[in-house]
Each structure stands twice: as structure tokens, then as C-alpha cells.
Image (cartoon, rainbow, N blue to C red; front, side, top):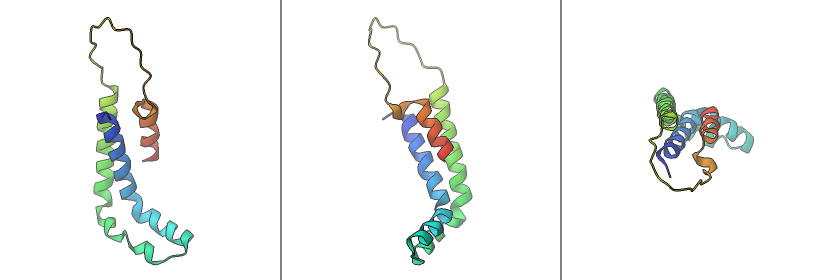
Length: 98
């Protein structure tokens, strides 16, 4: 797995962690359990730091994805199709979701 994919995954994880304090009460309401709502309340003070970490990680992932790649002189004629998880489209979806 390339570093851009790891960074995109880390950005998504930190974004979800930052929003757990808001998502959990909604899930608790839908599930009908009130005890679940207080499970992630300890994350509330960390929310600004997690949002900042999300922005930094996704920014670095975009930098890695958009920087010019070094060209290797090779007489190889292999054109491999890039997996979806390694495309700019996937990184864009993760960024919008985060």
C-alpha cells in the first residue's frame, strides 16, 4: 500500500474520531440506547486537535499525490491499471467525506 493511501486512511480515521462525539448521540437515538451516547464523551476536548490532524494528514496526502513523479527511462511497455484505492478520485472522496 502506498503512502498516499495510508495517509488518506489516517485522515479518514482522524476525521471519524473527531466527529464521534456528534455521531454517537445520533446512533444512540436510532438504536434506542442512551448509555452509548456517553461512551465517546472523553473525545470532546480532543476534537480541535483531531480536526487539525485530519487537515494536515489529508494535505500531505494530496501533496504526495500531486507532486511530479520521477521518470524512469525504461524500455518496458507495461501499462498497469492503477487500483481505485490509489487514484486521485478515491483521495478526493475521502477528503470530501472527512
